[in-house]
Amino acid sequence: MSELTPELKAKVANTVAVLQQAATEYADSAIVFANSLGAEDVVITDLISKHTPQIGMFVLDTGRLPEETLKLLTDVQALYGNLKVQVYYPEAADVEQYVQQNGVNAFYESQALRKGCCAVRKIKPLKRALANRQAWITGLRREQSVTRDEIGFKEFDEGNGIDKFNPLADWTEKDIWDYIGAYKVPYNALHDQQYPSIGCAPCTRAIAEGEDVRAGRWWWENPETRECGLHSGTPGDKPAETKPVNIMDYLPK
Image (cartoon, rainbow, N blue to C red; front, side):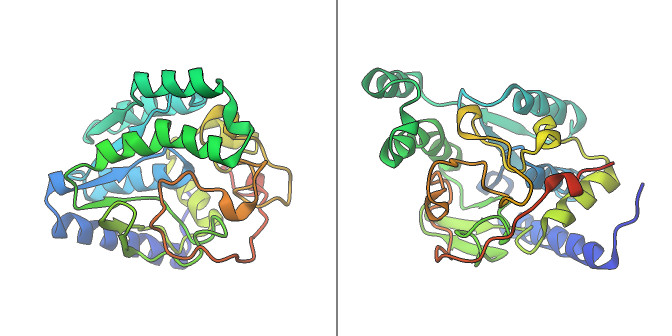
């Protein structure tokens, strides 16, 4: 196993402290981790398994996830047997209505239609997953996009009316991949194909060298609007200078 730098060890210790704080402040049923199965979230999964396995987690299966993401979900469930992972799906009637009214790929036509699809496949299932919760945990990082540059380790999520913990807020892309490589954490195979950020298959593409880490998500829209609404209560929606990334520089060798 490769050795973590002292700086990253300190970040890991802080992340564990944030998770332990969350587990202490809220009963097991009152807090949950929203696991998108991205690189950040497999790091949190590994840390929760090691330090706070009482925290439950859920995955939103939108019905249009890449096969590689579904394969990773199976791997995570098999590897981390001490964790409770619940999967939420969109309501079939909502999906049918959206497709009948707008078309199966209408999200490419306008931002309103794209957000409507996200509402059906992500936002409504998220509301069910967070019902009766007092707090949730996410893998948001400040470095990820222009809409996330001011997030804190703990903040009030106005969109959902509950507290939100972001234990990786100060981690860099390199930090994430150094941890994954050091501890052999399973990750989405699409990352090896230049996909740093992975969502639904039709709304995610590979990025070119030098592009921003979130450039492959809803790439036909302006960077300032590239959110699905899951984190509508996140502070820091002002434009900020983004950082290009070559994910291949960070992947475990």
